[in-house]
Length: 94
Image 1 (cartoon, rainbow, N blue to C red):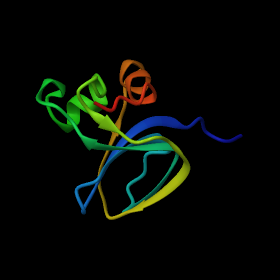
Image 2 (spheres, one colour):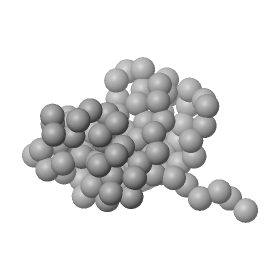
Image 3 (cartoon, rainbow, N blue to C red):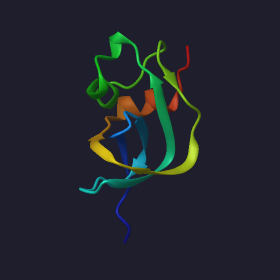
Image 4 (cartoon, helix red, strand yellow):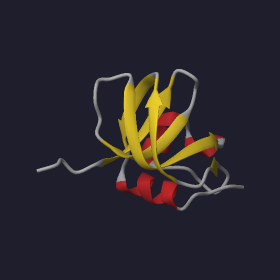
């Protein structure tokens, strides 16, 4: 039986910040489904951990989703809260 995919926020060596669904692993590569990128986050988010905790706000810029992305050079994988996942899926772009 396949393990359920988790909502994750992932950072990369190239300073990318991504959200999607996948499996947390101790690897430099990760595949995310229904993936989005945060191009800009506002100060009210309180940093990258804030994106995993509360998610992006209306003042952030989040791209539309793609079916899947494979990221290389992963530096951090954070589990996103249900509140965060809902905010990412709302796709704010101010």
